[in-house]
Image (cartoon, rainbow, N blue to C red):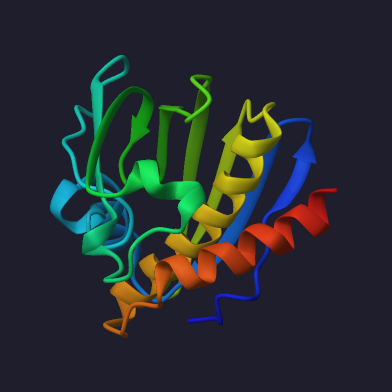
Length: 179
């Protein structure tokens, strides 16, 4: 597992951020952590996914499951449980998952996870598209960066990092990187 300060996402085109990670688990286990709500709640959010095209994607966030510290003032709206919905665009187990993701600005964006086996590990490529609002782009970049670090920790059985303390640092770093 890498340090949370490395492996920065990159802007590949206007409104598109791409992350790449080599995760310490086989392909099928990583797929389960993406698609099973209980496992996904350990690093991102819970909720059920109907993995058919057009299927319902439920996102149940409760950052208290990820960090004992309260959110900073800018994210007070995320205190406690939050629910929102998207839809499955494509799901090809265990290699491809695409779903819509509503942003805090109200914009609908799209998230793609591509998985490939590399020995006993899994290469994960996450691409988040249609992030045209700057506040969405910065918060999302820092959020995915940290959530992917938490995924790697969960897969490795390592302690989880302090979410909110690292999120603030990462958001400032992405502000510098993205301009």
